[in-house]
Image (cartoon, rainbow, N blue to C red; front, top):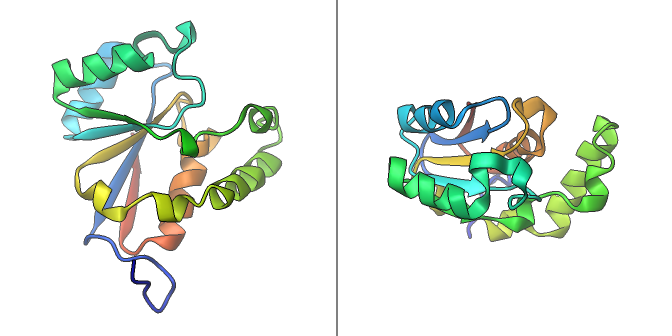
Length: 155
């Protein structure tokens, strides 16, 4: 992929990536938010997306609900999830952020994610209600540093 002079990867004009956490949202509220924002595809970036604690967002159930309720495609990108060891650092946000960024770089995320994938209205899903307390906020900031014309909207 061709790089620009400022070392940012080209992407479509005014690309918007949304993020959402499901905690503290009812299923009704969650799906209404996605529908209102005309989301076409959801990318699950959670480490634990199969546990009972995930409620209506357990991977298999969520894939079905998204398609049936809102016509949204479901994807799981495990290489965007933190590791179990990294999650132990979550109480030390500075260390957690630093280590998660190192993980993204070691997993070669910028070469694995294609900006063209985000031509469709896309939302990153995680658990935390607020992006500033979640790795999805770190991830989207990292992508903004490297992708040209990318906007982030935290739902």
